[in-house]
Length: 456
Image 1 (tube, rainbow, N blue to C red):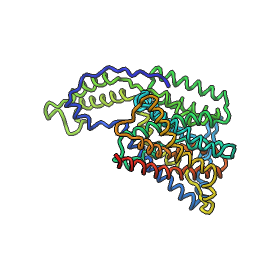
Image 2 (image 1 turned 90 degrees about the horizontal axis):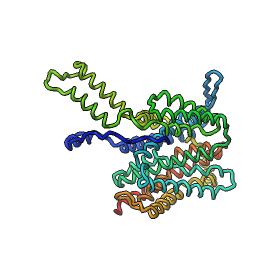
Image 3 (image 1 turned 30 degrees about the vertical axis):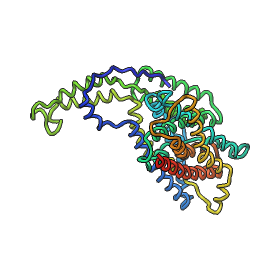
Image 4 (image 1 turned 120 degrees about the horizontal axis):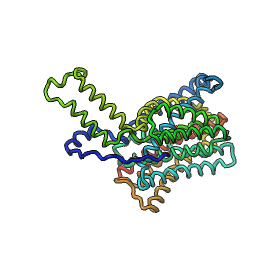
């Protein structure tokens, strides 16, 4: 990740009265982040249910739609993939891009910005990935499902926080922060797993092109280039190069995100001075100076437009892209992914055979039992080793309950399933395991967290 300075000119002191006036209007980034994710979780659940109903009532129509070929040609370049593959390999790259932006923000200024803040959720995420993978591998070693060991490693942050929001008044706010930080650290691990272990063969020439374009991103970041078109064009080039190289193209989304500038053109001190001077120009000294519409006073209009420009110059490109794309990813791309991938045709007569298959059992046991055990074990070891206390009001039963909710691996688990298996039968076995595990993890997490709150 490129290094970026945080030094800013300190603004003049603000009176307590002014702070008291402004504070209610300010929304902390985490509250915004939490609200968006909880909303998307319920939308994701609706899309999943719709896909299941559609696939079981009209399986032919469901499969025909998602396997419709779509081609794009530009000169000698020709790409032809099914609608399902365009969603999984193109639209999901934007999902991973936003994940990358969130990871970078959290590492720079959020819950992963210092060793003291990050040690417990990072340790928990490590345990929540290692133990489920081992549980799955023990049940599937040498079998046809051996390649799916990465499936139970993932946590679906949107689903997990949406479920947690159902009992948000019963648990300390620190539980939400811990689960969010853990899931973001988990995302880092999932991306590394996809890049390192789910790449079959590498075309080195294409990888060299991708490295050259990444160097271009690094140079643009170093010189504080803030033109989004440049990053967009280089990002598309990196995506195509990764696609050609044989590395899953969604990894390009995370790498590009790490090179998006996290500094604005203005620091906060310069913004304060400029905005303060512009606000003085709008000071209404008598009724004639201010009208019902700002259009009636050109000086005021110019001042407001200048304040807007100053706000734009103070905001970082990372902020603008994350806020601008988050709604598209949250309300369109992820539900569309669920709609296209969650439609499992369930043969109720053969459901008992599916549930006793080692793939299905490995995923269920990995997510429902391996996840919470790995999270609480590694978190406890990190707490004792580094003398890192839990957050205010958080108990070990809260950590265990959050670990259970982390067993909801839906989006990432289904995504890794598509990388692990080509056989539709194995894919369906894995999806049944993911859905069952997510339901069981939801019930266990809600029960444990509710009981933990009552016992306080």
